[in-house]
Image 1 (tube, rainbow, N blue to C red):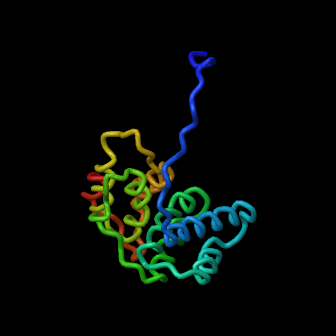
Image 2 (image 1 turned 60 degrees about the vertical axis):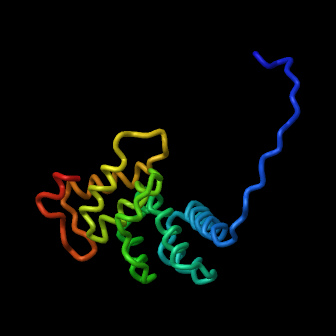
Image 3 (image 1 turned 180 degrees about the vertical axis):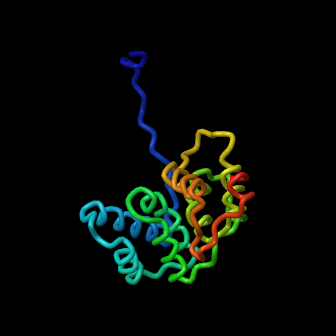
Length: 169
């Protein structure tokens, strides 16, 4: 209503640099989610293995891909399967140094940190999410981790958080 008679020229968006390696991460993630949406009874780990066998992704890109899929596994699958696949891929454990100002990334890492037995890092990651910010938090991963803490669920090695760790988390 304020601009109904306003005439302005369109402004073109600036060119965004294209990185083929990151485009491949996006493509694999999109193919995974599209395939699982179309065939929800399929095996997500077999699909992920199949998709990755057909591409060449550096370890850093594989890590980014798997972190980006934590939300799907917390909502539709089991993050333990994704963490086991992480090990099969021979990727190094995530570290607290991987925490960043990126709230999405920090919250997306939570299930993998937990399942790798890095309970202190989980506490630091959750602490990094406070106070709330306008950035996007991956709530399914946060919910999964808080549920695992409440149940005292074990990591992949069968170790549960020590008595002090759930209180810290």
